[in-house]
Image (cartoon, rainbow, N blue to C red; front, side):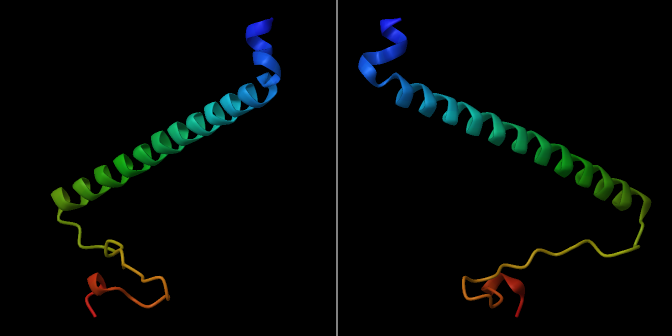
Length: 76
């Protein structure tokens, strides 16, 4: 029981441990979900390239500066 109480600081230590654990699990879940989405997008792009489909254009990412203006990589 002394280990769990940690000299009166157990509440702070265990809550910090729990908070860190929850955040770590949340980030792992988010990364896993995003990886699945990107894998699905990649499979769709590969299918479109193989089939020669010139349908809707692939979305282009545009860099935006902190002031909201397009960045140098936007092609403008």
